[in-house]
Length: 462
Length: 105
Image (cartoon, rainbow over all chains, first blue to last red; front, side):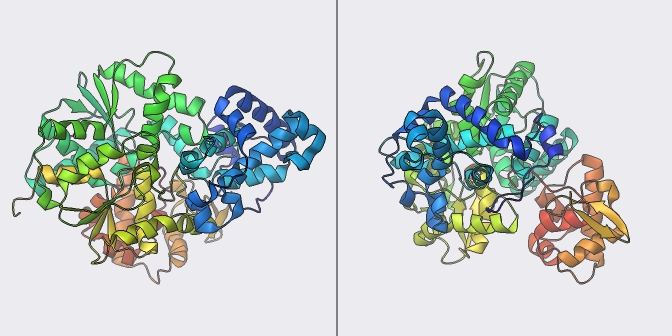
């Protein structure tokens, strides 16, 4: 395997790729195989064809991409990222490319370009801010996703993503949490809720004939206890007959991020199977941005049979119950200066921005919008699980979040060192825990349902 | 795969230096990682966390929720970071021989 001269995440080893049923392609065969996949992908996906043929290099995407703003590396300009694909496409599949070559932006694919693709397709947060501003409607995110698909078929996937894929096959969640661990963790959280607010709440697992199947982000069991507790408080308060499932304790779907074929479909079918098995009436999705995008935008077209029940987001639900006056909230318990980070996959991809505010506003006393916001918001810099710890990639995570840090600082919420940054997505949270420290912002990360849970059950002494 | 050498023995680790197989762990491994972690000496408090993590892993097949780790050990998160500068997941779990946590963490 050649050494990658570009800054790139540690790549999965052959053993890890075989666990995903992929046999890595040797270096000498990579170009040939890649060209085959490229042809297949462009023919199959219309948006990709649009991206190949329509870009005029107007440059509008450059200043709107936080990865470029943070690094000033021209390879991170969205149109240049797509060029890694486009040049090879032109060289092999267009007449002008075959005749005029470089003059019309065509360039034969090489092993070096493939290595560069691996580096720069995994330096893209898949946030789609470039798609929002492109006058031609080119969604470079679709190009990098297609590029990642191609790389997956070549056996080039970051170790982090491959290990998550493997954990999902094995346990039904991304952290590899087996049922005994899940049960123990939920019992611990039940005790915590009882201790904190004197309310005896059960967190049911695998309970058949439940009205609601709640699928949390599995990171909530390791890092974000208040998010799981908030959701439990919410369901309990409303008297909803709910459960979680040990077979699919996962809102995320890394298939979206590295393999939109088998992995995306497999994880989705796993959920639908469980819905049938437990006789569920409705699925409620937890605080996970990319997972909700997969759930909302991809599930209907990805499944092998009709989707039998409604699939909604937790914050569609909370907004509904607030609007209909069924939640009594005590905003004074959340009295810190608070700002909201719009997860890209919620506010740009799934139109959830207004609902997030509808939920947040009645739960807090001092909410300050950051600018820009809603669908114009900037990514946290960790989008699509660019959560790598390799030193080179970690430095990039800090740079990718420079724009976000500037936005947070401008709200002034951290001036007294007690601000809350509400980031209702596990990838955003995992990015922010270390990154807020790196930028010395004086704020803590919170989920949104965390604050709803607090406001439903205020501590007795307030 | 990279290796580390502990007491003349080659032990396989992943690219972030976590053990591939928890069964290869021994106290020498904890002492080896201690240097990387910038810890001068493994005190009783370090061992308390390491042993707790290992017991939990063998019982439940995963590392405990960080909040539970703090509660059961009686150390707050700040104290855990004082003991293991890279934190509970990347520091303490590594010394205890647990695999690197996966997912959005």
